[in-house]
Image (cartoon, rainbow, N blue to C red):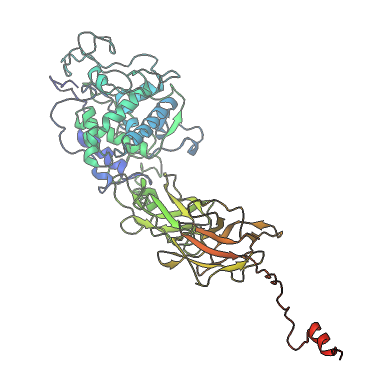
Length: 594
């Protein structure tokens, strides 16, 4: 950016003190909801000389010095047909207003610490070009005719020799401020932006110019919610104390309310800083009251009107001073919040049925980063899990403490696993909420053991007399509700499902060698169903695996059934005890012949 040399601009006869008084009067009726700093608004008027001459966005070109009405803007619907000065001055051309708001949104993302209000762009646009000459722009936002400042040749203005070859201002000898935001070409070359996405950076386009002005004001890491940074930003645009006070007065006025009007119907201010004549009296001049109104001095006292007035209007001396308008109520805690920030974990994790180790914590702050106490924050759980806050609620409201912090109640995971989200938002505001994701994982067991050491044996073709019972633990504590699977496998080396040997029975009595969907009880124990053996004798393995990696191999023995041994030839057959054998009985009844 080229430095500015030469003579300073000539200023209008309106004094800095008058402009400062206008700012103070406007600040006294500040509307609720305006971002605040630690300093009251009535201290924001500039009371010091501007910095030494140097770079500025406009080359210190002339500007409009008209001040806003002292009255707060009245919405058009407040008076049928409008007509009040405040109504007209608060009207912003539709395309121009849209450009300012889009620029604010863009820098909020690009430079979140700047805290630029779109009303500041409107104030500068009013002072620089009368809102693009009352909104005389085409559908794309380009001015219908160029808006050019005077030639900066040093003749009553700064002297800046040509820097753009006349590309923007048409002057190949000296520079001129260009467009609705009055950028000098050298500044535009380094700060120009494409605000409407047409691939061009045109200082005559209100979208491009507004975005460029927004970034320019946010330069040097300024936070415009801080008074000193705000003043420095405005003075970097045009180095004049009167300019600063004039912009501040319009900033406060627009903050109290604006409304959209059709393009091309806006009012163009009349007085400029290069006018050597006394300032034209008019309804916008603080020292000249509007016709039909009672003159009011700055401190709220009244000056009697000329004698001869109508009864009751003060002309006959019967008027009574009305008290000054009461100051509006200060903004509520909810209205002071500019942003909600996450001070807690970025993600929450817990096992099904357990309490979460951490809570959601947020910070409600103003535009300057100061914490706001007593702000109502609503925490809400969404998602398919049955995670709940302490007490079983899905939504709770908590007020911020003296530091601006709000902490949610404890969270407890239900039995349903999966993801969920906790949202924290400012009650009654549309500020972006804080979102914290969470996950409920399945219960785990890292160890499984048998509860008995009895051998498990069975004769082939019969049922096992004993049933297998195990206990699962996680970190040496009983693991309740843990999923488990039991499978007969061929061997340790080949843990595939066996095709013979012991088995379980399903609901229809058919053999199965894998059981799924098993769950440990409240003590972490699991008792398997009855087991059966087919006709294959041998040693078999039952593999039990739990969620979390606990594994146990149980060995079972199946023996062959007992068989009768055949009798040897010539051996007497055995007879039951107490029973005589047939041969013995026959022998005893026969006697040899003699």
